[in-house]
Image (spheres, rainbow, N blue to C red):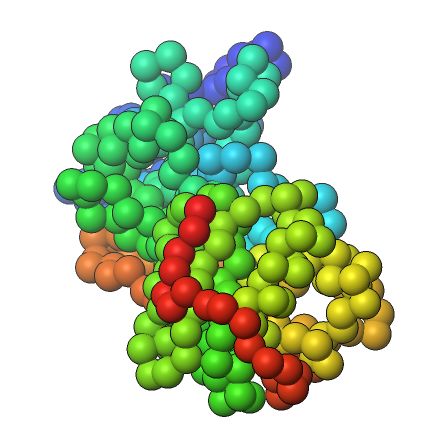
Length: 361
């Protein structure tokens, strides 16, 4: 028999078949690890495996994927540069859960990167084919974003690629599979905590993004107010929160705030404290998610905890089901409420004017 393949190139299935004295179909069946039309004896299988070792044969996972086989790879792709730089990053627990579940189900993970020429956006397609199809399926992180990204997702789904989104996602005309946090129910709980403390005039302070998670939070706010109290909603950027805004809301009688994220909360606290206002003595607030930014100590905000790690685990399990041809319905997961120390009774003061259920952009 001849020696191994040349170091300058990869050994082929044909060479493995010749070395083992079998057909390429037999080699393929051994690689796939499942029974097929050809009945294999343990002796034949062992001969093929020995030929692979002698030749240093490495399966071409791309070719196997293109042929419709499974290669036990799951892709992880984000529509924006969101991969973590430290353990306090928003996405870090998602990725921990994804890794743990993938290992438990015997998958390897393929981390997709953006092309160097497109530093400001991530693309699934390079030329005419998507690299995402190298894997059996893909876990999608981040928002769907603009029309081009949504078109990419629609195209991949139409080509039969399995995808599960971490976070509730909607795309008109398509049924997406996702694992989301129940932001609406969690915001109802946070709003009721303020109402039960005696606050009757509430403000929803949100950012400028209008993704599914932001809309779910605001929906929960209005839903909770149906049982009592009045409210208004304001969407703004952290840098636009100024002393005049805080003073106006205070004059209007606002004593309780639902704040969409910790960046807005930190800015609000900074401005309020510059005016001599302290929570929960002068006002109360809850943050609609667990803080990622390290908090000034000592401080414990009223907030709910997003089950990020568990969401990553469940996303892998759903994707595994899709890969195996099973039904995998989308899933909403509950958040845990943390009372914190930022909610107290409203201050004793004469209320000013207020517009019931007024929403401003």
